Amino acid sequence: MQSSIRRQLLEIFSKSDGEFVSGQMISDELGCSRTAVWKHMEDLRKEGYELEAVRRLGYRIARKPDKVTGNEIHLGLQTDYIGKNIYFEETVESTQKIAARLVYEGAFEGTVVVAEEQTSGRGRLSRTWHSPKGTGIWMSVILRPDIPVQKAPQLTLLAAVGIAQAIEKCTGLSVGIKWPNDILINGKKAVGILTELQADPDKIHAVIIGIGINVNQQHEHLAEDIRQIATSLLIETGREQKRAELMQAIFLQLEKLYKQYMAEGFGIIKLLWESYAVSIGKEITARTMTNAITGIAKGITEDGILMLEDREGVIHYIHSADIEI
Ligand code: BTN
Image 1 (cartoon, protein in one colour):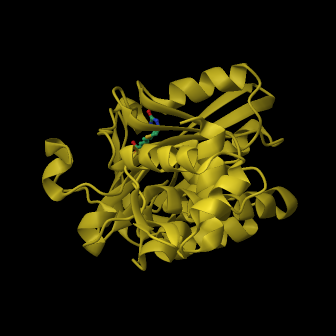
Image 2 (cartoon, protein in one colour):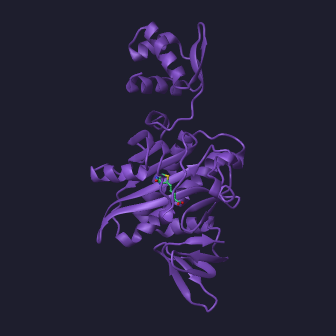
């Protein structure tokens, strides 16, 4: 089906808010024959929509498929720019790689790259990120903030807060953040965020926020090596979550926080981040490639750097590490 017709059709159903829409009304709005309407309905069915058709009442959507295509995300999106421009591919190596290319080609702020599956998903500290087909959210959000390069880590923390808020709103779960930006539910990781910069020493061209969320995986579908420390929203709530709805909520929260950040600075974001932090005030070990420091996590600096006080009372400033609580 032509994507513009598909979008118009989905908009008609969205406006009807679950009520039946007559075939005549659809044919008038789309400017096509009743036979063509019937054919479009068959196409929607093939795409996974469950449609109810009742004589004299018309059609309504009984169940939508759980897809993350641009159409699914646009319908009901409440933002001004984040998520307005969606670049969707079924399978990619990494959405980060595509986002980097789009930045180079001049992509607008708020452009999002999303895929159903990644074959070489990238994690922090050069790890891989397991991104199986159809069950998670694998996406990269492009921002173009006019801020000094050293402030970029603040956006990583901002992203974690926005995602935490959106997950709580959509699922009713209570979540925590482990520095810098792992989102934990009942102590297990459900979300990872990888922030990459395109910048000169004195100017940021773009920040690419890569977001991986385990949404509808059952326990046995999580990668074996992380099964004991990872979780998904399905595991925690016992029910499937429509991924496009969660993405819309994330874009809305991210945009609200980002606008506030650009207008007022990091202050509020820092407070919000600290309200979610699970490691502050606790003894933790920060492990890097070369060493490990154990101490009490004292908080974060104004630039979003972790402050760790060791047993001798020396404060260490941690820019990048794995945290063990
Ligand atoms: C982490 O190690 O915790 C960060 C994981 C980030 C994964 C996401 S999935 C979408 C985007 N594309 C990638 O290749 N990685 C990020």
